[in-house]
Image (cartoon, rainbow, N blue to C red; front, top):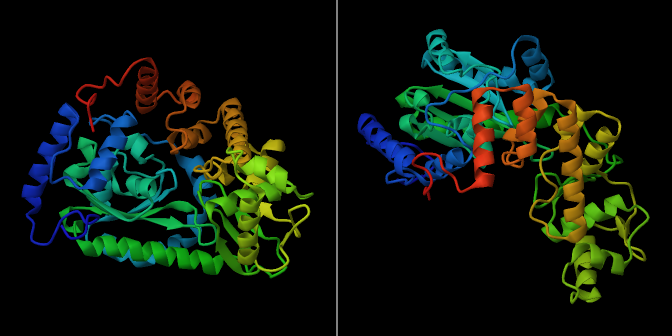
Length: 426
């Protein structure tokens, strides 16, 4: 296959490929191995699904209904581009007896629209607004996998992890915040075998890019005098928005800016050395070279020395989360938390801040006992193994998938995985 992200190569027999994939799926669920011709993206997703405790006979859970769903959708950033999505995808979905769907960053379906008969069929597997279709909840599927791997993906029939979904084919592409790069959710087209074509993958990708362009146009203009903003949550390389520029920083420069935003009074060279490097053999010369490179990237006037400091206030997403937690705005703090702070960083001060921020937020979520907030954390990549949060979620939302995932986590802590047939998956 020339493109590993396309589900079916030209000329392939859909019926024969489906039979082959069903046999491969059975082998995986029984023996834990993935035979060819299962694509790597699907094999990796099957493994993630198994590790998350998803069973092949499971089903999606509906988490938001009625007023709660309406309120959540109204506040979601993608609500602003739904007219555009409907304009671009609505006729295609209706004429082709397909569905258009839009999910949030955690795989929860916000809108499902399209051909009435197809919608009625989809209702039977809870492919409905308010249902969670993340990989950690229902295994391999286009919207859930697209947000998990952050790229467009097709899923063809028996490539779906849950058997109930295997009659369907879908294609989805993630949509990003044009200012921060953060994944907001995904657009999806779901229907029959005819969607297993390169054009459907390109189509959803084009719709996603159009939605991002529309979001950029709808965003308010930022005057040049605006406070620079640093985005470092959920990213190994921070983004700095300043003076109309968006600067992608290296990991080391990201660490330096994160620390300097927290110390407006400045830090000496020795203080920065201790904060950034575990290795005591790193010399001040090395740090000065990094700072000189950073000063050239930022431009004149933003980074001063003796002590090293930022000459203007810089807002950061870390500070936003902290302020909201301090005022008890737990929902707002969770919404602003896009993931662990610079997750790949080993800088001692950054590691301490990363843990302190995550622990503070998860403690607040557990105390709040809001099932939606707990579910968002538990189904996020950073929370899928968080036993304490899963316990809290099971206490307020004891659905079968939640209980199953909790049992799997407890078993993993007590002994090697024992789910039938998957102990040796690789």
